[in-house]
Length: 104
Image (cartoon, rainbow, N blue to C red; front, side, top):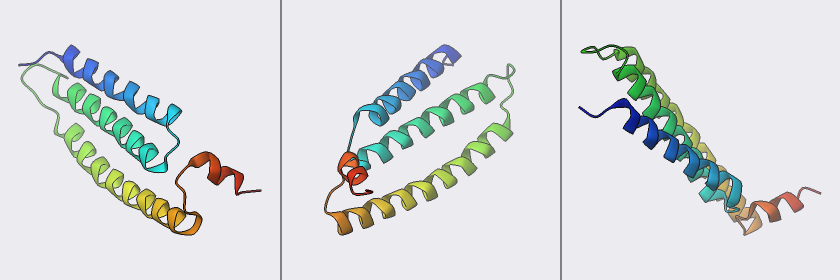
C-alpha cells in the first residue's frame, strides 16, 4: 500500500501547478483549467486523509463528499466554459487583461 506522504506530495504538486496557472496565465480557458487542477488537488488530499484515518478502515464519508464535490465542480466548470464561450463570441478575445480594460 502506498504511504500517505506520496499522496500528499502529489496533492501539493497539483496545488502548486494550479496556483501557477492562476497567477501567470492570461487566457480564460487556462484559468479554468488551473481551477480544476486546484479542485483535483483538494480531492486527492481529502481522499488520502479519509483512507488513512485509521489502519484497515476507509471512511466512506470522505469518498461521498468528494463524489458530490466532483459533481459540483463539473457544474461550475460547465458554467465557466459557457461564460468563456460567450465572452469570446462577444469580445473576440480570451485575454483577461484586455477584457478588464473593456470594463471602463
